[in-house]
Every structure is written in C-alpha cells, then in structure tokens.
Image (tube, rainbow, N blue to C red):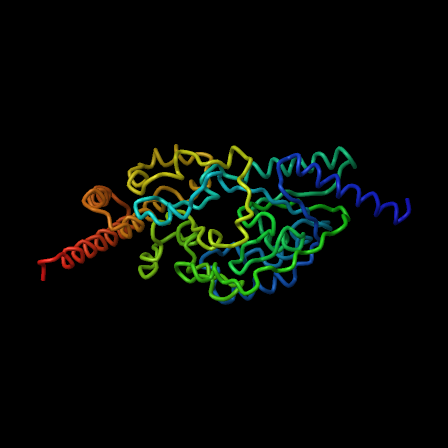
Length: 367
C-alpha cells in the first residue's frame, strides 16, 4: 500500500474514532503527538519552586510524565477525550454564599468518574481493534504519570486558562479528561489558541490567591489541595479563607465567562448523590466513620478518609459564625477525636467564641 493510501486510511480511522467516542458518551475527541517538552520544562520549574506541595508523585517518575513514549514504549499518538460533568439546575453561587451549607466541588457530587471513563475508553479501544485488528494502546484517566491537560490542549480540546484548567470555547471547563496512548500514526489535530485575553476573574476571586500569576498555580495555597491532597494540619492563616468549602473549590471556574456555554451532563452517574448538593455542614459533621464509608461508596470523596473529612468540616464550622448548636456539635465531636481533628475543632471553637464575643460587644448598651 502506498504512503498516501495509508494516510487516507488513518484519516478515515480518525473520523471513525471521533464517531465511536461520541456514541460512547464523550463530548469531544482530539489527537496529538507525544512531544510535551515545553510542558515538561514548566513542570520542572513548578516543582523546583515547591508549588506542588507534598504531591511527590508529580516528579518521582522523572521524564515519563512528559515523554509518553517512555511511559508506554511504542506510543506514537494520543487520543484525548473530554466528558462533561456539570449537574443540571446547579446553583453553586448560592451554596458558596451560605455559611451553613457544605460546599463540595461539582465534580465530586456524583459517582467517581475514573471507572466510568476508563470503561468507555476501553470500549473505544475495542472498537478500534474490531476495525483494524490488534494494536498497542493503554488507557489513562487521571492515573499514572500523564500530563493530561497539556495533552488535551495540544489535541485541540481547549486552551489552558489562567487558572490552569482547560477551557473550551463551546463547553467552558466543567469536564473530565481521559487519554488513550496508541502506537497508531493518526493524523494530528491543531491546538486551540488562547482566548482569556485580559480577563482575570479567576485570579481575582481565588480566596487564597493561589493563582500567583497568569497560568501559575501554587498548590500549597489552593483550597482543593488543602481539602483533598494535604494529609496533615491546614495552616491556620489559610483556614478563615476557606469559608464553607469542605472538598475542593470551584470559585475560579464558577466566575469564568466561558462557562456560560457549559452544558449539563447527560451522565446519570455524575448527578448528585446522598443529597451532597444541598447538605449542611452540621449534617455531614455528624457522620460517623461507618456512615462516611457507606455514603461515599463509589464517590471520589472517600479517598480523603473520615478524619480529613472531619478536619475540613471543622474548619468550615469555625467560619460559619454558627450558634449554640454548632458549638455543641464541635464539643461533642472533640471527645475521642484524633489529634488532627481535635486541633481543628479547637480552632473552630475559638473562632466561634471570638465571633460571639464580637457580636455582644457590638450590641447597643454594651461597652
């Protein structure tokens, strides 16, 4: 077969891959090569500055993260896909503004996306195999040392926003990413050019100013890192800035103008479960470990464990300016609490006491 005929066949296959991906529930598919040297250099600089916090996995695999052909020998092209997850009739602004409500990142309200997307990508690989025979591939969904955002950008799924999330002109940024490393010489898509312009809403709204410069995030300040990745104590100076956010923080995406184009997810598995989109802090703080494990089964929240769950909620309760019921719930939980949880409960109690004394001082007739 001539070279031009082979190219034509691969162009046809790429079109088929896009069609199969849509049928499997992916909203968009792009194809790119394995050249991530620029992204690798940015990663090395980020790690050298210590902005990865204690996420040692970001560097311990060396160059495999930015050289796909080292991670999976024989890789020639990467199929990158996205899947929308925004819940319908969602009102994150109202929840974030209510100090008694528990704010959980929109991506974590439903079932864990990893298994669902892996299965769909595996099915996509199966359809390719049915069409062309056996080929080399490996599926990734936020797993292993993969630079999924730079790959998505190179594959044309969007551009890297100033908040370091991928933004799509027609879908905003409420989507998951997944990859299929392949040994197929597929035709490549063109990257999307950047469309943030002079907008800085994501930087301006960040409660902890974690976006230290356009396209630069210091994870050590990010509320998502503090509530999900950080194993130990949350720095005291950051606690008051966390508000009612107990698992992740969507502020930077919530204000992005491009998210007005976001489409609610068609996936039932991504819809809110266990009433997490309407739960109060006190309700969730009363979960014992058995309840936590049962109610977070199949949820990404389970990975932080019950102790860090309580740690996060204790901080939020300290920020809530709640009354007697809140204070009693904190004191009740203090009995038998681990050192980690007890530390944050005591901080919350102190904050509520200071808030209460301030209210009393401001009352007419009090000196």
